[in-house]
Length: 511
Ligand SMILES: CC(=O)SCCNC(=O)CCNC(=O)[C@H](O)C(C)(C)COP(=O)(O)OP(=O)(O)OC[C@H]1O[C@@H](n2cnc3c(N)ncnc32)[C@H](O)[C@@H]1OP(=O)(O)O
Ligand SMILES: CC(C)C(=O)C(=O)O
Image (cartoon, rainbow, N blue to C red; front, side, top):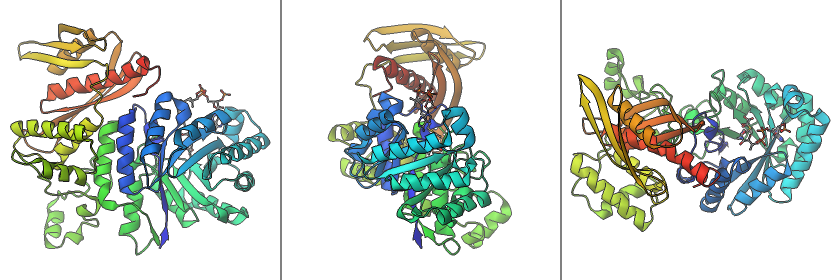
């Protein structure tokens, strides 16, 4: 078995998904779960892109111990300095420098000749190497680049000190055969290629990201880049959970393995889906709601007789639990703490007390508290910033009458500490509530998406709302959970507004 390194870019390319904007605490929590999942490298962000991203990458670098922490930089000194400033205290830091190598990108975007691009790439890898030992260099749009040119520039950046060479299919254009042949060509035509890890980074525009990544591995790639749930720019990146499980299930066919702890997959996928607001489609491989559901009679009959007739992956392999009923009204702190550890959270004493209180409050209203309920409580507690200046929901009331327009009355605390209240109507209860909150907030708001789901089953299940909106023309997402649908909706709305409020108040999106 050849061990393939997993480079997770959920926090960088994943965050480039339209509408996704994670705050520092959310990024940190995701990073901790990625470490627990066993990724070899996590790309924590692009520090030069904003102060908020810089601070998030720095915090992750200071916290993560076993995975390499990478930071992205364009091929210029300012970006490289920023990347290094953010990751220098990591146990295993990596600077990831990229520059495009395809004719269209060099000519029309960078406005540089191929010779100039070679000089910039070599000089910037050399510069980055003066700061950090581990340097990844990416040839952006490699799959549309001239192969001879690619071989020339790769040989030179390796001589300049690169330790990993990444050949992205940036626009998701290539096919497995073509992409595999590119890797083989590079293996055969770059004399110093065996000194480095060769990496693949695929986008899913034509639905071939996973197939292309596997083709690259079959032709010499030793590192695969991708994201959890396949999120990312446009149609997304290769889904790492699909790659790892495919290698495991088809180990008879693929002589490759990864370090991923497969039973952590579902939990990590849930966490990322909730924080990003990117709902995993029911039919998504490995982590979709229906991935292990058998609906039709013939399939059910087969599964009852022998699960393997229709089930190639056992749900437990990826951490899907059939019965996750856990703690109840009478559970104590020890059992609670033990469960928190199992779910992969590390809480300070103060947060532990808050979480226990929230859990006890929930048991008063909900008969059965599941792992999923607890997971949401812990996510909220770990990323709670209610001690900071922001809009806070103090109370609300919605009057619904099937013959008249619903009316909402809302009281908010403003970031300046004032209490404000007003009432508005709407065509439905949520609209009345949102019209009212909007009337209380000075920034112009345009709601672009509203998504309601339940956590678990039953009439007492928690409601979860994700919203996308433009606040002051800035696209932003928000998430809220509560036992009541309207309360969850109000929290999601304010969660989105507060993200933008922080952007303005601290001049960058930092928390
Ligand atoms: C394929 C990928 O996923 S690449 C990563 C994409 N991620 C992002 O873009 C993150 C979000 N981006 C941002 O916040 C901003 O674009 C910033 C902060 C990075 C840069 O902002 P600005 O300085 O205003 O530049 P802007 O984005 O408008 O243009 C990009 C500039 O970088 C140049 N550039 C692009 N890639 C590279 C590179 N790899 N190396 C050097 N220069 C580059 C472009 O040619 C352009 O230069 P020009 O201003 O001389 O024409
Ligand atoms: C910066 C590189 C690695 C990238 O994201 C791409 O080319 O898609």
